[in-house]
Structures are given as structure tokens and as C-alpha cells.
Length: 441
Ligand code: PLP
Image (cartoon, rainbow, N blue to C red; front, side, top):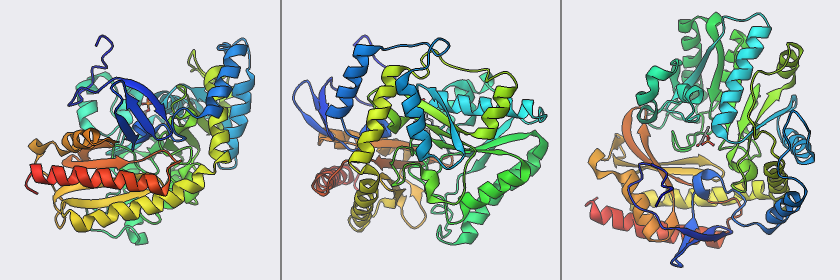
């Protein structure tokens, strides 16, 4: 195949023929249940007729209008719609085409805001380990995932990191507010160690994605993080590239806590795979200050593309029309309980976690110590391949604070039904049985 993606995947994959709802078919006619919504993207399911019709209508009118020459109706409409979902005050929407671009934009507007408000010394953006914020060099400097960052480290300026709040690994109770404080206070310690006058922002995946495997912050963590950022003058950036659009049972995950960010980045579920689309949503005073100083020194050619934005508008309308955010909560609760029940059957499932339909389970050698499975077992690749052969797509990573842990994201589209959850569980049990047998677990 000429257009191969140069990825490090273990197996060859078949050619996609078509996709509808939560199912996908290859050219041989085999059906797959899309249990990870692609890469947690296709939140409203595949081939939604209303979205396709809206895109067709837009295509007949215009597919490109350069942002220095025209405003477009779809981009104006979409900006208003998405800002309405964001916390009050976060009203300014800056369009991009993907998650890494959204993160680059967020750190650059934060930096420009600092420079125009007399805080030129602030440039460090603190992030967490592990984390994933994208693969472009600026976003990579924030990403805490050594296999992806190390080869490129000489090419960017390294940024300070604090540990993600992995209470389940450290034997702490995530429901205990002392646990939240324990991890959040690491941010304060890092700010003090770096010199508060040099720190610009803190970026966090509010519910972890592929990096931590759906890690949910412990009680009180986000509120304390907000207080610390306010106290030391840092901007707080929520990277909602994956969590945005209803995935966690709120339109934005920020609504789970009383801890409002200054900037939100959003992409995957925005146009839900119908078009490349992303955005950052920014607190108004930040944008006002930057505009007064002459404008944001940043932008991408495809920003606000009318076709992409028409897809975004139609996707948001479908999320609302089908009440998918509520379904994410209801079906997420059910799926999480079903996944948790697997722990009785498989002693090598060490943890099940997540919020809404951003769910994951982690495989370990010993649940008591959370010792990882042997590295050469390559569980994160093997179980995905077995599930794939059984017709179920799930998403995996091997990373755990530098240790070798294997976690698996089960994140179906938000339109999933109870019967379809039964199908996921049937295929998952079949796959875990096979994996256990192969590895004498
Ligand atoms: N931020 C988060 C939280 C992500 O999950 C991702 C992608 O997985 C990105 C940023 C980067 O997005 P993209 O791959 O669209 O550049």
C-alpha cells in the first residue's frame, strides 16, 4: 500500500469499505463494532444522514473562504453554538483543524497575553506525566510520554511536569479529599521550584485520555488546581480535545467541577470524524488584551473552513437532538459496571476507571501490587489484535508513569444502546478468555 501511515502498529489492517452507526465493514464484508469511536472521535456514530446532508448543502455553496477575506456563516454559527456550551465568560472561539493545533494555539495565546500584559518573564507551561497533548513540537514539549517525546527532545524546549494523580497505583483513596490535595499541591511545589514569575500556564486533560487510560481526578483535585493557578497568576488550560463533545457525560468535562479554566482546547468529537476540526475557546479578557495589542500572531490556512464548520454545526445539533450527553452518562454507568464485573472473572484486570463513555481497564500481573504484565507479552498490542479478529475495535496504550502498564480504552459512540453494550461484552469476554489462555494467566 503506497499511502501507509508509517505507524508502529503490530498488524496489517484491512481496507475500510463503509461505516454506519457504531459498525464498520471491511472490503471482505467483515463487520467490526467500533468500540473506541476510532480514536475517541466518532462520537455520534458513522454516516449520520443529517450531518451528511448538511455537508452536501454546504458543499454546493462554498467549500473555502479565506479568513482574511470573508467571515462564513457556518463558522459564525458554530462559534456561537460551541461557546454556549462553555463556562460563562469563555466566549471567544478560535478555529483550527485538529487537537495538536488547538494546543499550540492555546499555549501561544497564553504567551502573547503574558507579553502584552507586562509579564514577559512567564513562558513555562507545566503539564503532567503521563499526558498526551499532541505531536507537533510545541504540544510535544507538554506531552508526558517518553516513547513519543525522547527522540525529538533536542528540538524543543522541555517543559516542567508533575505526576498525574494516579491514586489507584499509589494506594490512595480517590474519594478522599486529602488525596486530591496531595496531588494538586505538587503543582504548587513545582511552581515554587521553577520560580512563580517564570510560569505561564498549567495544562491538564480533565479526564485522562490515551495517556493515563481515562484517569479521573481525585476528589477536590481540580478545585485546588484552580486555586493554585489563580494564586500564582497562571492560566489554566483544559485540554478537552478528547473529553469535549459529551464523551464524559457533560458537554465539556469542566462541568463536572467548580473549577473554571481560562482556555479550553477541543477537537475530536467536534466534527466527530466528519471533517478535520478543532478549536480553542478562550476567556474574553485574554482575547481582548491580545486584540488591543494588534491581534494574535498565529493562525492556520484552513481555520474556520466552511465545510468543516457545517459538519460541526450539524454534529452539535445531532448531539442535542438525540440527547447523546445524557446517553453517555446512562450507558457509561452501565458499561463501567459491566467492565468492573469482569474483575471477578479475570484476576489480571487491575483497575477499571473513567467517566461517562470515556472508560478504560488496565491489565496487570498482580492486582495487589499493580505489578505490570511482562513487557514481552505486549498485552497492549495482542489483546487489541485478538479483539479485532473477533470483530471488536478497542484502543490501547502501554504507559504508567514510566512503568510498563497496559490499558485499554472502551469508548463506543455516544449513541450506543444496551443491546450493543451486550455485544461489546460478549466479544470482550471471548477476547480476554483467548488472551488468558495464550498467556497462561
Ligand atoms: N490532546 C489530547 C488530550 C488528545 O487526546 C489528542 C489526541 O489524541 C491531542 C491533543 C492531539 O490531537 P490531534 O491528534 O488531533 O492532533
